[in-house]
Image 1 (tube, rainbow, N blue to C red):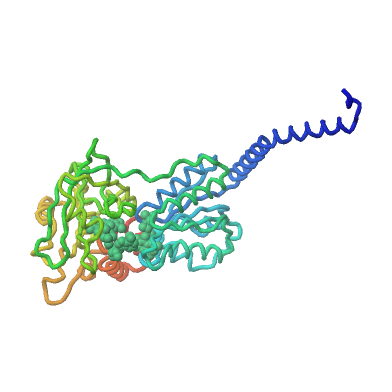
Image 2: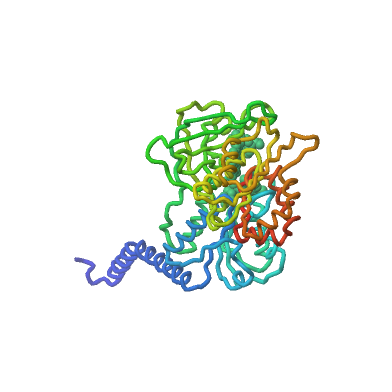
Length: 454
Ligand SMILES: Cc1cc2nc3c(=O)[nH]c(=O)nc-3n(C[C@H](O)[C@H](O)[C@H](O)COP(=O)(O)OP(=O)(O)OC[C@H]3O[C@@H](n4cnc5c(N)ncnc54)[C@H](O)[C@@H]3O)c2cc1C
Ligand SMILES: Cc1cc2nc3c(=O)[nH]c(=O)nc-3n(C[C@H](O)[C@H](O)[C@H](O)COP(=O)(O)O)c2cc1C
């Protein structure tokens, strides 16, 4: 070799060898650096006390996502306390270092029922929170004027208290997958893990429409139908009174519609009560039109059951119940009455409002039977158009203030099902008049005031 003794050449060869080694090692070093950083993030996260995952949910979407959020943290070795927003007091907020809030919006930009106390008590005060790092997942529907109103208000309040956001608020429009994906991504980053479990919602199953009967022929109101459905394949799944179904209508499958279940598993079928919705231009609603006018008996209906924890009996199973509703709201209340009949629990008071007794007395024979059998202790049917002046359930409730107070003193829980604006808002006002604001808020915080309203 001519150049064996040439030091410059030797240096070039050595340099190239080192360079080559570095090129080969770089990906390994990158991965190792990443792994170390992730391990460090995990260790720091696990070592820092006070991770809380807190939710405010009405129909269970935010609650479900909160459970998945807590499970993802657990998978990354980070224990987190999962709780309802209403369970958090000032001391919890001031003691925590990291809180992930998952909250939906109801009414007109308001908090879900169970979080009304938190919003009213804490979010109206100044509470220094400089130690707190937080993130907000806000659930809502952009069809409403105050899109994600409560999530936004919570975020703004936390900012104003000096808390620091871990990443910008994520807003979810009608359970859109992309926004939920973004939250998962941020969460994985935060927890130093890449193996977040799959969060996709349970798939729609095939059910068959087995029965459809119009309940209010001749009514001044829109047609209302009793529907019965069975799984097309396999056994009947379990559910509890108070739960909901979601139906994906062929005309709008990406936006599922919710319906309260009017039966219990012992009935062998899912019963629904569906009011036909008609738009101003005469078109029928996408889901209610299909279910009540187009789908034929035996046709497949894509449906999934949804736990509706906030409207279940749960801890109230032993309490007397005051059940209040109107229109298709009898669906959710009928589910509870069936469960009570099965359990032999007779302390039930039903207050129900519709238009005319002659056409709108839904499930009359069944209600009469329950009265005879002692399942219905007290029944108040209020027909708004059967007398000169209009009268509604909230009016009857107000007249019975003494009885309401007596039932509540005996430990009763209140369940409301039906229209939010026409009925639930009026009933809420009356209850506040009869029991006081504090009384109503205490009932709500204790899970004794539950609503399935829409
Ligand atoms: C928790 C819960 C329980 C319910 N339980 C029952 C029940 O037991 N019985 C019952 O009859 N109903 C129930 N509903 C109402 C039901 O889910 C449907 O909203 C109703 O049947 C009307 O749906 P539709 O498809 O027929 O009408 P749609 O075609 O959805 O029209 C209804 C309204 O939605 C608006 N709208 C329609 N499409 C859109 C869109 N893409 N974006 C924004 N706005 C739109 C329209 O302006 C109209 O005001 C419940 C709702 C909730 C949230
Ligand atoms: C009666 C009613 C009122 C609602 N009001 C609002 C609202 O004002 N703003 C909004 O963004 N979403 C509103 N929503 C949509 C809910 O926030 C949305 O469906 C959310 O996914 C529900 O989550 P949850 O199951 O955790 O309660 C409303 C929904 C219902 C049924």
